[in-house]
Image (tube, rainbow, N blue to C red; front, side, top):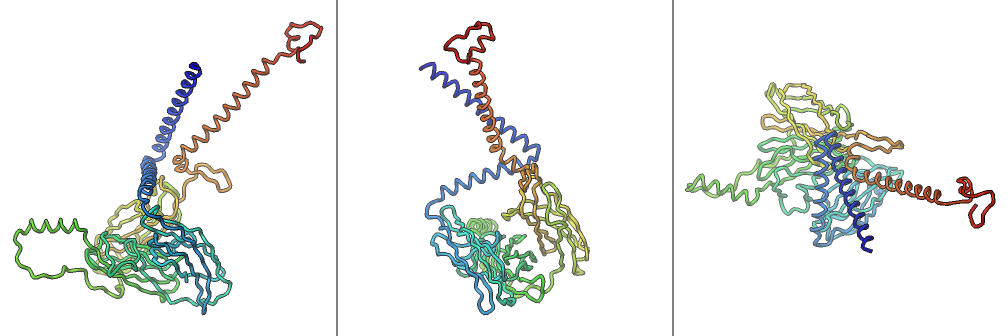
Length: 482
């Protein structure tokens, strides 16, 4: 028994040593291949895995109350008085604070407080797939419903509705959830809204220490989102938004939102302390409210100091290649002719995370055409991305944006649309190595089995074998297998 235990321990030590050598070799192979492909890929992949682990840990420790309930969504197409719409409804949930709706895997509206929504941006003889995401402060934080498909009727006289635009959320919260004027600590809060004009051109304007003119595009569902490219003033400001139909410039609608950027208590205390140090005995000053930004304007300015368009030479680009962009400046006011300006390019990924920013200096001229090729890193994941171009001069910030798709370079093509890319291979190197190790073990088992059968065949003695070897005469014996 002791010899048997000793032999088992010896086998276990060998297995542990083999496992350690295999794991170390696998990590070394992953490290070397990542450096050969791109050192930035190694940093990006490690950071992604760490964030995923941190998120999982955060989710587990934050589960104090019940998580949002998975919405059970019901949809129905309604044609009433010549107006076609799809009514979406789901049960109320006290654990959910807001709801987001995706249509055909694209955002339709975010930050909803009510558990119902009427989608009027639909056409006849079409099918739409809706998914509702419930968001709450506890548990995993989100609950995604099963997708439902709703088909509109073949006939319904639907006149073009009056154009409309609405600013729905501010700083990640629904505008309707604020009491009074919406407030935020961030000086670059995110605005989002919706319009009933598909792929509308959304013009945005904020007047402050930096005069911001921006133009973004709504998606096919009329949803749009925007983050100011420059920090906004503390105090009260107004965002003016106008949606225009790209096919009919006379169809447009406007909306405005008055909001306030406030300072955090620590910043206020720090500034008050600095003021006390600078002026130990201030003179008497009558009480007055601190000045805020200029009173709100109801309409967008007629014309900005300049206008420009951002064109992409191609809507798709492979990893490691260059994205060609063209800026065409038009309508430049004569007073700014020859002025120096900065062009700032910013690239965002599908999750709206900033991935790359760089600057270029130009001299403003009317009808100026400025071309720039943007290098796309080889380790970036494929998918929809956004490029934002800003022209910054004097106290103006004018921005435009465009969308493009990054295509991953295929490393292996198995046919039938099955492709394996280099980043996928590196990220899943452990799984691939495990599969090959399993196949190797199966092959070794079959080889060992074949070897045992061969030895057994050699050990099986028959009369014919003995006769060939000269141990038997011509007389056959008994009891020996033939």
